Image 1 (tube, rainbow, N blue to C red):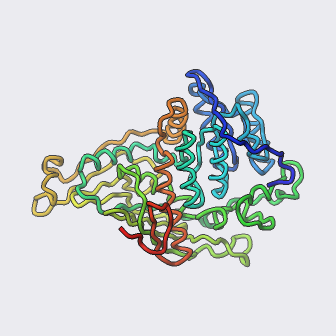
Image 2: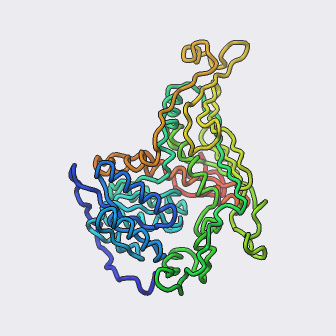
Image 3: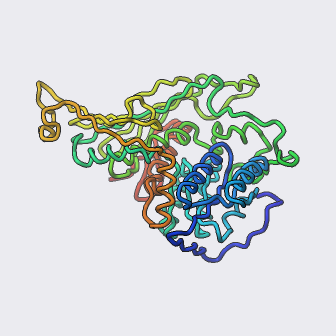
Amino acid sequence: MSAAAPSFAKMSARSAARVLGANDRINVGVIGTGGRGSYVAREFAKAGKGDGNCQIVAVCDVYQKRVNANKEHFTKEYGKCDGYLDYREIVNRADVDATVVATPDHWHAKIALEAMDHGKDVYLEKPMCHTVEEAKQLVATVKETKRVLQVGSQTTSGDQWHQARRVITEGYLGKMLMSQGSYHRNSIEGEWNYKIEQEAGPDGKGENYIDWKMWVGPAKSRPWDPDRFFRFRKYWDYSGGIATDLFYHVVAPMNICWGQPQFPHKVMAGGGIYEFSKLPEDPNKPDREVPDTFHLIGEYKGHSLVLSSSMANSQHIPGLIRGHGATLTMVEHGRFEGFAPQITLRAERRNGKYIVPELEEKFKGETEIKIPVKETDTMQTHVNNFLSCMRTRQKPTLDVETGARAQVLITMAVHSYREGRVLYFDEEKWKVVPKAPRA
């Protein structure tokens, strides 16, 4: 931690949360106010403006410039918003009801766990955490503290996934066999090469100051590196690259579609750095540690999931689920974060007869059924679902258990790629193992 960080007494017992009345405003503290954190904070402010149910009362970042900008913005919104360099200032505030955690991935679990221990509900940006063990800890802590935790993959609030779950549950696919999805981009300069602000750093003066030691936190100690700070998603210490930044938006909705979130029992991954091998501004320096092209296969009980992605080609593949009796296409254009006006069921037929005879009654002689999807602002829907659940104490759309099942797959895929081998998951022990556990 920073040498300048305040000293906080370790609590001997978990803090009780403020009991929210029907008309009480929810006080929100935002930890991590880079591009994503600032955006999410503004979405919470937008929700609060809508019906007055929440307000941003504190913001935190290790970069003083970001603290100043967000503090000023939300002070204008609400009359008072405090700004901090140390996240513990927010976690320890008794008047803060919810924390938004939008830091780099390696800090997600630690801050979320501390926030819940201090009686806060948590809106936790995707990916949920950085390791399988952290996912297990988050699940256990939500259960023990009875806090509300919403994982911030807002695409899961899209209506298409919930419509898909309904038709699968009603038996329109027959036996489910395989799901597929993708997330492709094509950036000229290489994905995640965000602008580096040259004046900023641990020796920066005034608003250019960055508390680098605090930022590194639980990761391996390293000297100041602006590329690691501003472009953290390219480094294994802080991110899983494509798997954790992008595939989470595919795997989490799939778990909703399936009707019952599931752990994989076998995971394998491949890919490589095929295009972005040099920094645009410094051709002598490697561009990244994480691959620019990545694919995985996850094996579940009775079905498989296949995902592909490249940061050097923008053509998606359709997002769909194959059953023995029919195929359900949720995202024809392949973009899992985009709006799909409908989902489509296509029956498997041969010589005019349904492969699965029981589908005759459901399809009524048709080969294709189109089911309309309600268009929503998924970000606002996701935020408002979290705020509503804070009052009702119900499970949110992307609850910790569903989020953990998505996290285990993508974290295992990262390790499969890095280790060059197939990995297995022992669900009973909550552990990644080198051999398939005995049935």
